[in-house]
Length: 251
Figure 1 (cartoon, rainbow, N blue to C red):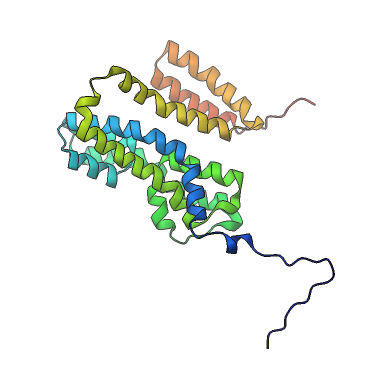
Figure 2 (cartoon, rainbow, N blue to C red; figure 1 turned 90 degrees about the horizontal axis):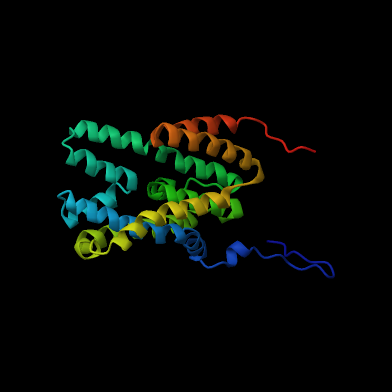
């Protein structure tokens, strides 16, 4: 027979808040965390839908590409390679190389969650980890690792995925009307980099500031004097190496 616990005078029984929280609460928390990225995905998805139709794809094919591939840069690359007559094997290998980073997103999230980590349904939610969704998950776990759960990760992933697919369909079906407004096109090109910059700033700490300064000092002259490609690659390499230096503030 189970023995009932007795409490001393003034002692209050503790009740787990996790057991009291509604089942959809973690999902809603994840959805709120990734909402800025979801909003930003809509105009970029519209831009892809417009480009896909101009490249000769039907709205159905454009939507299928976004639903299955779900990788913005790679999808634009597919349009460029196929439109340029590149062989299928070259296109496939290019997409694999471009997207290989996604293989590490799921394990990185599980490592970030530490003692709260669980591999349950990881095969499912990790498929939907775009760059923006991954960054949102990192921000959410930085705020509180206890946020991690399969429902939280599905909440993180659902908004950006639906936003990207919806934007693609809007662009594919109504791109002709939207293309008549140059200001709309310019805004769509600016919004996503601005959102990513805002998310990066949330991740910065004092320890990162020297690395950022070194990266900027390398990137700017190389971009101006050589080329943007050399500047970006050179800054990435030097910035990564500078992060290995034990930067310390002066006492």
